[in-house]
Image (cartoon, rainbow, N blue to C red):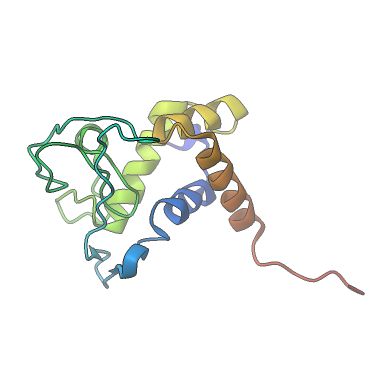
Length: 158
């Protein structure tokens, strides 16, 4: 969806915030892009600072039959995965723990949620659909900006 205007650096910012690029708690991606051990978020049980989302997938993706949990390196709740899942590595399957599938799914979800991500309103709307936290949006924006600028270089004479 090139008309969406989503930059790779926004996806990288989300991946960094959500799971440290698939390395949260010692996880890592193998040569096929499968992140293991699986990254499973906290129970979305309505406790302080957490949305309440009763189980929507019978525990299929997150192993929890009472509450939903975000899963994979891009941290999808099961209903979002069900609606937007993409086969990023073209193996005929969609897996939220496979990094290519997860990142392509995030791109589709962001574009569907924000429309034109080259505008402030579109970008902010897409991020708010992904995670409603204002501090989350600031963290992603800071990282996306940093990634988009490339490695730091020292100015002459500094």
